[in-house]
Amino acid sequence: RSGAAIIAIPAKDTVKKTSADGFIESTIPRELICLAQTPQAFRYDVLKKAYRRIKGRASKFTDESSLVEEVGVRVRLVKGSLLNIKITTEEDLLLGELILKEGIFKYFHE
Image (cartoon, rainbow, N blue to C red; front, side, top):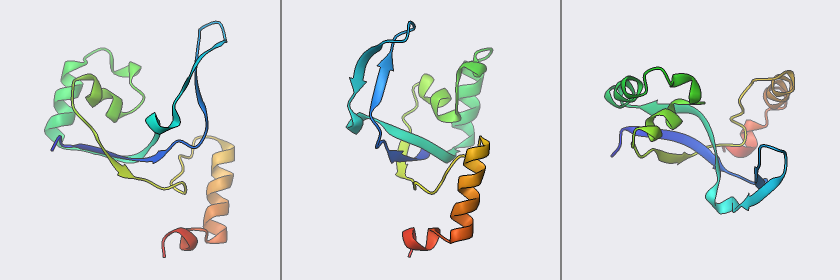
């Protein structure tokens, strides 16, 4: 056991690798891609060690999972849910409110 786990869902969209000048370089096979969600769970010692080893570079990482991956820790994937949305934008908030208002969870978690 690595002491690191996140929830994630399989990618449904086609994902493209792009160049700096705005052209597609390749298509990444969907079966190799998942979308990370929260919560993410780490043993305290694993996370502390990772933060110590990347001193001064923390802003380069978009989540704690990428941080512990950088220092060689294998992160276990656990099945997530499409309804576990990240609220970042106004549109996300509206979608979250709709999910709660309509009681959509009951159709996915019976």
